[in-house]
Figure (cartoon, rainbow, N blue to C red):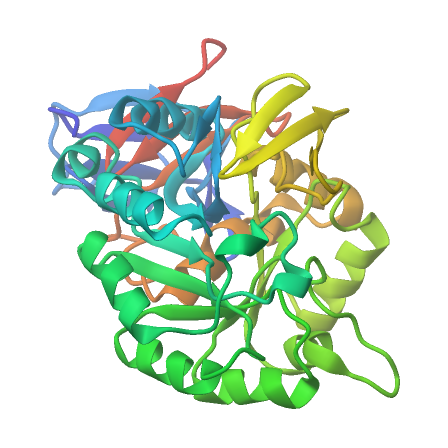
Length: 392
């Protein structure tokens, strides 16, 4: 946390869906005041550090609810030093909150990594971590994508409890396949504990998917990827996702979903229900080459990651700032409209919108400052500047 309050002046601030000519005063971890340009508030301390944001846009910080790593770090293998490294990298991409995502692995490895990622040391050094996304092992092996099939299994509340104990209660989001045995009761049990359930990696029928949604599922994992698609006589899980009001993740790297599909999803679900995620792997921010994703060996060519053994797409090399630029390019939507896909919507889905996801007095000072080229000039998480571009 910064020693002195920070006064962000002369920027264009995203408030209530539109950019406004106001200034911000950040004190401690909070946005202390928002006031008309040129009018310092009486309650604002005079000793604040001033930052001139002329020509730049100030937005809510990005929230990535689905990432397996980046900058050479894989969360299924990461050490404490690795977590610090990848958090710094994410900060350079505008991320102020994220969920490290653990994919299916041996129970021993999963419990070890859950314990590490939720340890006191990591919490002190990477407060941007706001919980864990558990993507597996409760997934359909026939729609496993890059998940290692040997570790996938039916829903098991005792195993989940072991994982949650290892994570000290910090598993915030869990992906499951709604066609698995006991999925509906499992979803109800997790929802009652405050864990958000997302459906995916699935061959579920429409009825099975709707049963999970009625039991409390609130989102769909990387929609249209590793998921049975719709047919006029077999609506399947995809129709349930599109028809219902649950949220849906989308990976906007140009490989997982082609631009017309992204436009269709935005039109069908609406901007208030889509969430942009990276599903990034350790290769994000690095050149093409050989990498790993959990237990899988991966090759990245032209930015596209695939499992070597079977050619399945293996997450992405996407970053959140690149996702924002891609969506703007693919959809022709303005920045202020795209912003909600990476801040407001994930915050609402996770139930943390009272603390973050938009800019207002009293909320956490989770902010990203973008230049005119939609590049990250500065990132602030919980009132602390975590990244500042040399060009800023």
